Length: 169
Image 1 (cartoon, one colour):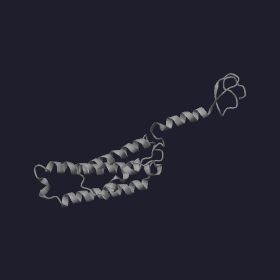
Image 2 (cartoon, one colour):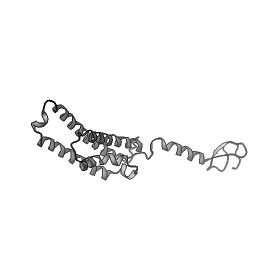
Image 3 (cartoon, helix red, strand yellow):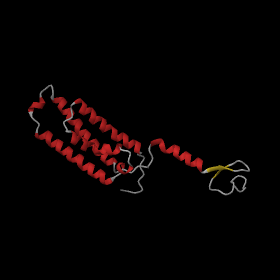
């Protein structure tokens, strides 16, 4: 990956991308429409979980992104294989068939979204956490500022002479 690549993606935005599939998975499990066991749910949600955790090493880790991507692809392929193999006429009664298709499309879409979350683990961030970096920058600027005793001008703390009157600080 290009080392000069600068992303506008912050850790806060990555966390929001991770929260969405977790909420969707919990809602689908709560509604009883998820045809995945708990272990596969956690394995599929690993990229989203790593995006939500507050550790920089997890939110930008290429090896972890590759492993998570492989796990999600294997789960997706296994799910599609299961869907094709065990698809019998029982599920396609007129009253249940459309819901059956919608549920499986949602689960496949969730897998694809998790692949996107795995890709987000590749992308480096700028190191800031949303708007939290702005007050810290202002505090550092205030610490590097002082005033001239002669004229009262605001000068940089690194200077030895006032930029306004020329007197020694």
